[in-house]
Amino acid sequence: MPPWYVPSWLLPDFIWQETTHQSLADEIPPTPQVTHPLLRRFWGILHNRLLSFSQSYCRWVGIRFDNQIAQLPFGLVMKWSDGTRLEEVLAMQVARAAGFPVPKVICYGDHPDTPHAPVSILMTRVPGRELGQAYDTLNNEERDSIARELKRYLETMRRWKSLWGEKRICSLVGTSVRSVRIPFHYAGPCESEEEFNEYLLRPAMSDGFKSESEFNDALSRAKAIEKMPHRIVFTHGDLK
Image (cartoon, rainbow, N blue to C red; front, side, top):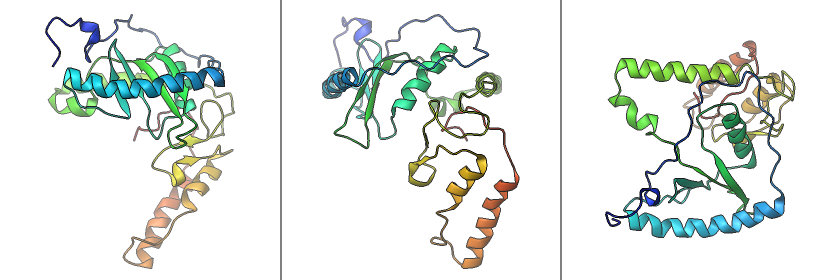
């Protein structure tokens, strides 16, 4: 553990105080211009050094080192995981500009030598505990408050108009959507919901089912989604 006289901004629980956003943007803010590739490569080299520094820092302050969410002093964290892509950076920046309580992106780097994790993001640390860790300790009033807040965020982003039309399923910048829950961990961009559903159902196989009839029953239930058209809206890939 560090000595008692260490400044608070060197400790892993330090948070930069920010003005709370009271209003959310009715229209989606402009997507920021992407940082020049040469500058992203420079930040990538620096972030690689920060990851090594985080190991020593975590030992010094007595916390567990995480090579995907690296803890740093000065109220900063660095995300460098398998799922981190440029689209995530831009989505964070747009969400913050819209008034959502998300980290501030300091810089982001490219890592051409690690194609499974090509982008790292240096960002500010946000206050609070993960909801999954705190939820069981909350009373009903607190849980209702969280639900209302989340509902407000979702309703706001789902009113936004996409630059790519009302039917296209894609990222903020028109590229594929990513999720570990779909085939090959990415999809599209798809020009329609029908194309998206077909992509999801195409790899279906009977492996893992006890019988062919059980597989066919599951497939029929899955195909029922084709009869349930949806409005295509902005959302978050980890919501379920």
